Image 1 (cartoon, rainbow, N blue to C red):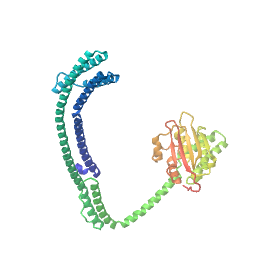
Image 2 (image 1 turned 60 degrees about the vertical axis):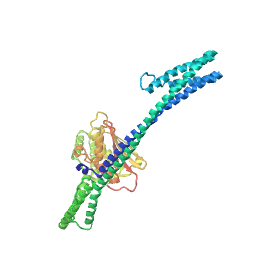
Image 3 (image 1 turned 90 degrees about the vertical axis):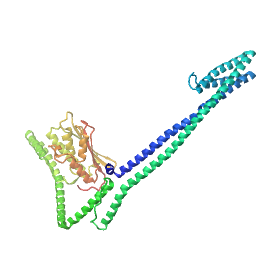
Image 4 (image 1 turned 90 degrees about the horizontal axis):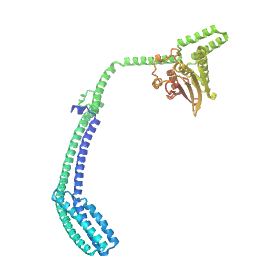
Length: 496
């Protein structure tokens, strides 16, 4: 009973329904099987009488067709005889041919034996008629007719005896079906009473606690918070609601007491909370504005110094100028909206710096629709993606690495693709990037700190949409493609 009280209302109702339905199903199945069995036996009761009647009728047709042929001697009469003779032979072959058994089986054996002799005589009679031997025809016909009388008498006697036996069986089966009907009625009444009792008990366990809950809730609604708490007996939905109601009443009482003492403290906490939110937003803005990795700055300037030592001042000047342009863009444009053309120019500068550092090992190509260069995008969205392609895609691979930057338009969307032929990226890591779950340790030491997580976040803010970027990789050593989708909606862009 305790386990039953722990069950949910739905489970209890389903359990009661399943039990009662199963009982009814089993009862009806039992009755169906037995009644069907009885009906089949009833159908079989008089089969033997029907078979004997058919046997007698066929025997008569054999005798009549033989007589007809003897009188007319036509081919139709002969054909009719042979057809009836075959039908009778087939029926006789189904009779008992054993020499033991009850009286009925012995009678069937005698009929089968006499029928064989009879058919032999009729055949001889037909053959004698066809040969024109009148004496043999007369003698065989008389013997066949005599044998026909014996067989007819045996069949009649066997049919009567079989009918008597079958009548007794029919009465017994009829009584059995009658008893089964009464058993079925009584069983259905008992099951119906049990169902009614179970439903009353089940609804009582549901409605009684609900009535108590409704009465207590009405008092609380009128302002009486000193009501007695509800007793919780079951652990079903009603029990859960009653427990929650009790807890609600207790919480309201405690809340009213605390409310009287903590209004000033709560106001002060709200002010502090607002200040904390303001500081947090400022910190987030500053975090997005300037995340320049000192390792990157050190490495690039060190490469410039080494280059200055190795060759002339012109190339050194160009290199240092590119580095200065790169960091100037980082500092001034980090929180601005820029054109796509400016972003691509920054990527060109970044690739130039890397090729100086790594002796031209970075193979970079562009396929850009120049009519799309004036669209507005957040700053610093392409360089971090290209940087990831270099650091995590084509760095330290055994084949020639290549990065392809493509800009094209599909209907009302500008697609920006950064694709490399590097080591690829696993689906699990792609999922982490899209959900902003990568740790700081996952960033390269040679990174400027503005990773894909930052790019994705700013794009989503800029476009007010979550479906702004996708990362594709066919598997290990199959490369990676980052796709950015910018809707073409002139005049609707806002600064990030």
